Length: 231
Ligand code: CDP
Image: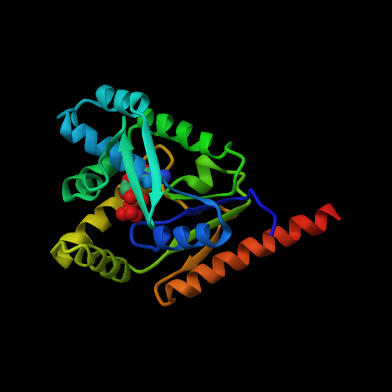
């Protein structure tokens, strides 16, 4: 299969983006990028520095912090200026504030710039988030939009926390997901929307394997089309 495609995947929390994107990237030997981890990193730093109420300071953090994503043993490890903050970015406090930080235009500009640069690395890439198919890579070779019912998405997120030994309430998680859905889809700057040319996959009733196979089949179709055009 030809290399160096850009595969862009968007969707709301718990729609299966991370799990599918990781497996698709592994199968294709592509770079995997969890763009949400970058918004979470900035939010984590803003909380630590106590500047959540100061947009200019938050923008400065997004612009000036060296954010590195390293994919090790199936997990994205996040480093800001060399410091490992992986555990901190999935906290309840970050969950509660990340969609507010992500609404800030200057934050988005700074992070989108870093994400676009990853697309120029001249390797295949699978990037997932909320605006990857619309803003970061509007010309991506493959565009996928994942959805699932709120109940199914909540169930998955609760399971993820439980597997890490963290006890969370179903209602608390469902409320956080609903609130983030609302903030992410109604914000002025690059809201979460399905790109016109993205292929929508409802993951409510399919297994992870089926979901991954569907995406890989779409990638293969794209490659075949490109190859036949070349001939
Ligand atoms: O993993 P989960 O789906 O819960 O969320 P995430 O991908 O870690 O993203 C966390 C938050 O970052 C989202 O709720 C959005 O507010 C924001 N985000 C964004 O605005 N744009 C992106 N490309 C990725 C995430």
